Image 1: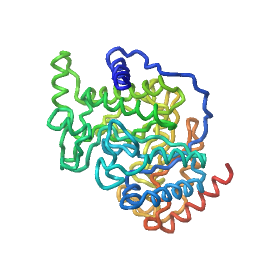
Image 2: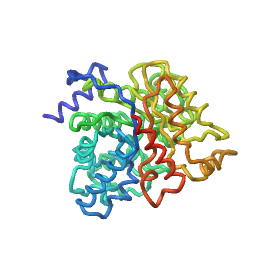
Image 3: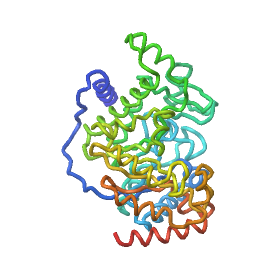
Image 4: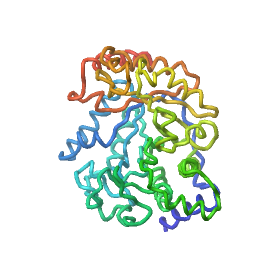
Length: 394
C-alpha cells in the first residue's frame, strides 16, 4: 500500500504539477549560520572498510567530536554516492564504500547513527545525494542485482560511458527514481535537508536519443544546451517541490562548480535561473576552490560574481578548499604557490564571506583534510588554530 502511495505522489508531480501535500504543520526553525563540512564516500573508504561495527561507531563519534571542536554545526553527509545507500533503503543497495561489496549489509544504518550522535553534539545532517552516478568503472559486474540500475542496463535509461556508468538525466524513469529516493529520506530520517553537488551531466552523448525524439515530437528547434538545461531544471524544481510540500523547513541545497561558465558548458546546471526565480533551491553552495591570488578565478572576484547573481531569497554558503591548504595549486597560474606560502587563507576567506549581504555560512571540503594526520601539513595545522579562535567568539 505504501509503495502505491509513493507512486501516486510521484505521478502527481510529473503529470499534473499539483502539490504533494503530506504535512506542513512544522515550527519555524532558526536562521543560523551554517558552519559545515563534507563527509564523503572517500572518508568511508578510509575509516570504515574492513573494520568491526564497534570500531566504526567509535570513528563516527571521533569525527563528530573533531568537527565539534571547530564549532561545526552542520555536516553534508554522502548518503548515496553511487546509486546506493549508507542507510536502510528499500530502493538502493548498501554502498560498497562501507563494506567493499555493493549490497552487503554493513550491520547498521550509518545515516541513522550519524543523526543520533550528531544530535548529542548539536550537529545537523544534510543528506548528500549524487543522483546520476552509478559507477566510476565501466565494469557492470560491480553492480549488484538489487541495484535499480541493474534492471535498466542495456536500455536508454542507463549509459556506459568513458567516464563510468550513469543514469540518463533525460529519462523519466530516472527522474522518478530520484524523487522516490528524496521521499524515502525526508519521510524516514530526521535530516535538515537534501543536498546535490555538481554531478549532473557528465557525458556529451548520454541523452542524444531523447533530444532528437523531443525535437521530432514537439516540432521544436531547441538547442542541445537549452534542452539539457531544461532537463536539469525540471529535476531541481520537482525535488524542491517534493521537499517543501512535505516540510517547508527542510532545506534543499546545491553545490555547483565555482566557475559559473562551467555550469553551462559542462554540467548544464542553470544556476542563473536558480538564483533569479523562486522554487528551485534554498541555499547555493558554490565550490569556490580558489585562492586570493588565483590568476584566473581570484576568490573575492569570483564569490562576488556569485553573490551578484542572487535576485531572490536564496542565501550563499561558499564551499572552501581546505584540501589545498599547504599545497601547490597547479590550476591557479601565477598564484600556484599561494597556498604554500600562507597559513590563513581559509580564515581570510571566511572573514570576507561574512561581509556579504546574502551570506549564510561556509563549508569545508572535506573532513579528511581537516583531521587526517596523513593528509595534514603545517599550514593546515596553523589554519585550524586560527579557525578555533574565530569560532570561540560565537
